[in-house]
Length: 110
Image (cartoon, rainbow, N blue to C red):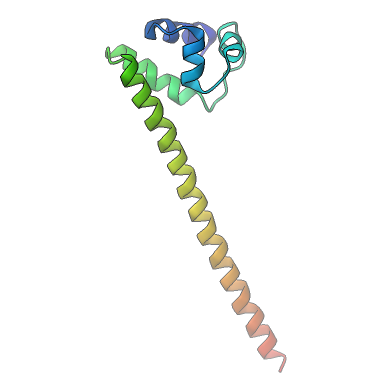
């Protein structure tokens, strides 16, 4: 994904830089930076690629783009929650194991 592609996507959506910035959750200055060759964060690329695919199939009215945006970030949020929950489970299991080991070693000393 490069600066020309970003601008092409925005123009295909018929969005102003301000509207595009709002959709991406960034400032106007950030979009201007992207379009003039600034670094595009890896976190934005999957969403931009998804929009690009929607442009290819002609499914880019404003309502559809908003739905895609909402769903993309909601799915990303849900994945993070699931990942965090998995980590919590692993931590609980490690704590239980540590507690059991502590009890075994305490009991072995008596």
